[in-house]
Length: 505
Ligand code: MSP
Image (cartoon, rainbow, N blue to C red; front, side, top):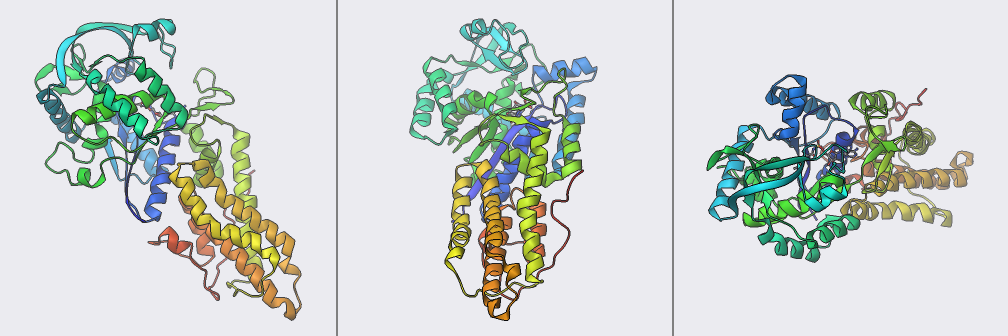
């Protein structure tokens, strides 16, 4: 069944260049978007940059440039890197763009009109790195330091507009409790629920002392709190609040907001509350993936284990983009924390070469360039035939659960089983013409299995899987996954080429 599928990444702060964390979220979202396009869903994939707020102002001041210049410089790098990594986003939203700013002002106008915003005064703690208000109890428990960066919290005391968050808490709670798939993984859901139940205050949503942001339409001396500005991107990019909201009507609610675990609260409490206040539906799912560490420790520039753009590019230079994608997805069950390790990256490449690449090569060699017809079968065939048959449904189930590690390993397991089947049946030993029907059947089943494994790998190895299928005479252009899972017709010409995953070093 085809449907619409709207997937987003967080919009990243362009206060620096993208690093492994950004690359990971974006490539995971790209994999999901590619899968949904392949199954024929009307897919829309959004990413972008979150350019306002105090963090941008401070980084720009340190660099001696205006925030706009810092943003322009790094946004250019983000956009170029996504192109370089062949990320298939359908749009890229900048919060400094006119289309976003005018739509956000429209949102604020609506919230003022519905009396969901009122003027008051805020006094309390703020985590400037996270752009997050922190309660006295949380601040005290964290010794007045950021739980993420360890930097001291800052005391704010100023007039501010508030959003009536408390009014929407019962509905948000109800929504989370009655939609078990809204927050994933499950453990994150419990964290949000217990924090919500502990009590929540109305949310300060404007800053009178900051100039770098979107001015409130009814009181331009205040700029909008950066998170309210940022979360709105998921609808402003679709044209909500503009004269042209066709995309909004077509794609909202989002099917999946993919995020890192540290920004769950904003996405599952503030964002649905805002949407409810606007009379809109909540996103269908917010999935928080884990955090990357490197060499077992938090990535940090001072420790020298920071996986920056240069290191990501070096990994691609050595192993290629598809191996990097496979490694990132395979590294841990999706949602768990992950650890970057050069030896594991090398192992992932070897696995692709020895299992998938090698399986294809053996078959291409033994078939002598043509797909053989099905012939006499034997009980030993059953296991591989069943695994091949079962792959499409297993893959669909893994994608439906966002179990990206399974999505990466299921096809590899089929290729591994195919190699085992070839070893066990030894078709290369069947040289007597009387044995040819049996040999043909073995090669038929093996070729069918590896072609399915390759097709299943297309969202993860978009280039190598297409190359492998081309060697089996299949052009993937414009085909759905269901079509690609179909039979390879007997007599189809193969075209052996270069090994898909050349040996490194
Ligand atoms: N601008 C906000 C998001 C607003 S969304 C409406 C923001 N930006 S960020 O530049 O800090 O990016 C945070 C995101 O980058 C995380 O949610 C995650 O997707 C990714 N990662 C950054 N570091 C990471 C790791 N070390 N590991 C995995 N992903 C992490 O927050």
